[in-house]
Length: 149
Image (cartoon, rainbow, N blue to C red; front, side):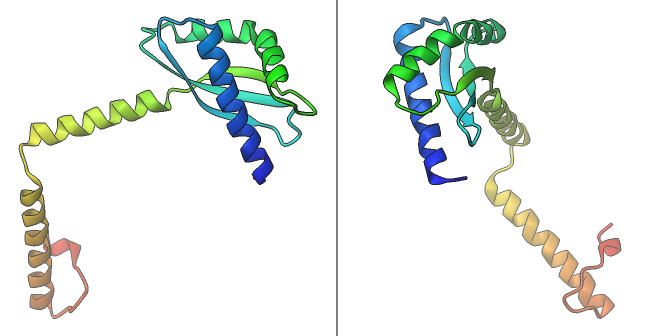
């Protein structure tokens, strides 16, 4: 991807974010996660992070897609490009998936009751067992998986 295209994407992201924060009031936190534009700058996909909407994400996205022309006009006044991209807004659930994954991992750590030291000790014990099994079989540096079972 060219440097110019990267700069245009960041500029669009910043300006669309400022238009949305100034001219729209949502009952949820709406952020611009990414803006993807075609190389000819004719089309642009705006990926929105929507948190706290309680299942109304699609209503927010459809409202922005309805007001797309108005947003594009405001964008054209603020940014001088040969073509102002035709925008389409899409919900991006990557942040919510990341938060959910982290909470699951934290729940697993708390549920286990194991500390990091126990994990290291267990790992060292497994290595010692594998090393011992290899020495008994005369295989230096080769781990025999069947002897661990």
